[in-house]
Length: 117
Image (cartoon, rainbow, N blue to C red):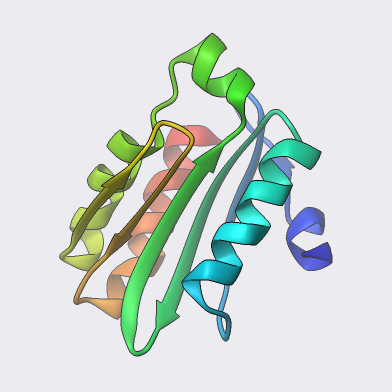
């Protein structure tokens, strides 16, 4: 979590975290995402991870971004998931997608950088 906090940068509308995480479960990523979105608010996060040889994308946002800027993580993750040949969804504040193409994580995160940094 400390490494992720150090990777947070200023973006267009808020602080932004775009990062690859390896070696932890989706549940652990979700726990960290919920901690970060409240502790580092306003924050938009996009995480890429390979879990059990499958690509995953996680998008989360602080409440202020959802309310003030109409950010919807479910919409964002569905758009980014095209890169990993996958799909997903969730809620406005947290969403995730799984896919088939691990090599698509980097282009998905690059698209996120173009959108939010």
